[in-house]
Image (cartoon, rainbow, N blue to C red):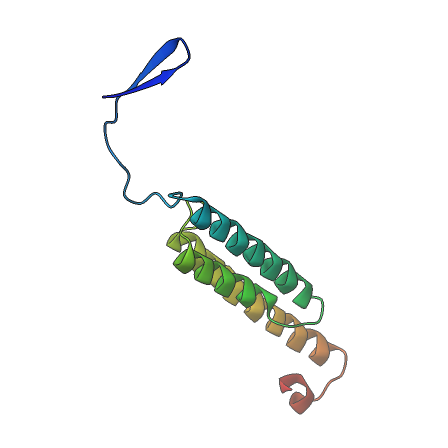
Length: 116
């Protein structure tokens, strides 16, 4: 039991347990979490823009989520979500490849041109 006096009042706080996994232990770690989150979101936005240039932005998103989970685990991003993102990314890349091959073959590309 902890007693804290504040003005005319005395507050009694009972501590039942201490969470050893708490990451907000000081101002430095809080600031570091904010900096890491800003870098994470910046990289996610960049990876979305890479999709415009036909680069594998979906895999960049999976990689950045994986790295963010390793650096600073948060409740919203867990390993199951990262596995789902990876599965969806692989399916979308395969679908993109199939649609590109089908449409190029349909509009008169040769077999070598379809494979390239």
